[in-house]
Amino acid sequence: MRVLVTGSNGFIGAAMLRYAADTRGADVVGVGRALRPEPATGSLPYASADLADPEATSSALKALRPDVVIHAAARSDLDACEAAPDLAWRDNLEATRVVAACAAEVGARLVVLSTDCVFDGEAERLYTEDDAPRPTSIYAASKLASEHAALALCPRTAVARTATVFGTSHGGRDNAVTGLLRRLRASQRATMATDQVRTPVLLDNLVEMLWALAVDDTAGGIYHTVGATVLSRYELAVRVAERFGYDPSLIQPVLSAQLQQSVFRPLRTPLATAKLRARFKDLSVLEVDAALDRFADSLSAPAVFGEGAAHG
Image 1 (cartoon, one colour):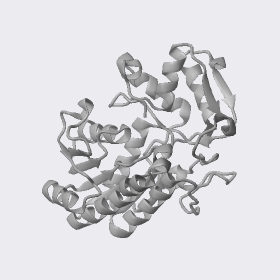
Image 2 (spheres, rainbow, N blue to C red):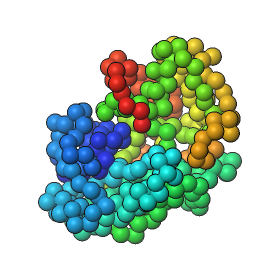
Image 3 (cartoon, rainbow, N blue to C red):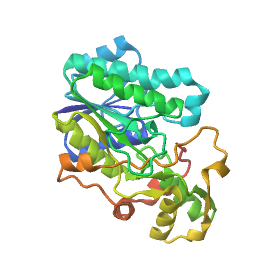
Image 4 (cartoon, rainbow, N blue to C red):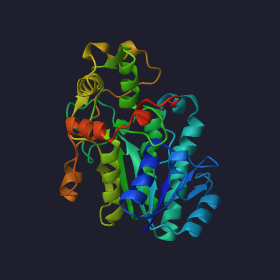
């Protein structure tokens, strides 16, 4: 099986590429905007492409002939999307349109990454795949439009909505947990919102979910691919501090309004995984404590606390 992963220089894309190659033995190729791959995936085949360019993307997919395309490429920084909406729509919607059309052209299975941010966060319960999205930002609106485009253009599509992904980064970039660990290690305080409620997921667990969707051609439509525990960003940070032996009092609880974020973040967007669990009965959907244990087992000091890691 040949698996093409877009955004293979990114946090999720790099992990997906390595998992498909190293754990599943797939014939893989990564695709990214950069001329060269990140060192962590540099030993694997790589192609540079502007995914919003129909001719270039069509030529690449026709040459590579993937059986599965996992579309992880996106412009995901909420503030950057608000500051440059044209780029957000191009990199999220237009690129997905092109990838979906080209995947359909070569007869490939398509898995598209999306986000919990498509919901407005006003529900007092877990969101299911059947709930009506109400995006509140350029990023969220562009991702919702991308979902619709992929499902319309490629009949063999599954959309995987995820949220608050944490784990060891193959590219050395910090995420919610590794960035926090870096601060705690330096005995620095960290401010975390008590009213932003999510269902965080371990990166290694997420790529297992994405693989399950990739190889089951009958699993179409939208799936929520997150962890099993509902908790606030503050509660997650406290769990992390306790699990790794740091002082939880370094975590300072605040309300979102006190953070003065330039772009509104939905407050409560926990996602239900009943549909995913029912479809893939042997697939683990980890509780957060089990996820943190598995994360701890996978750590090496350079991977978590290496010098010069970029934030993303």
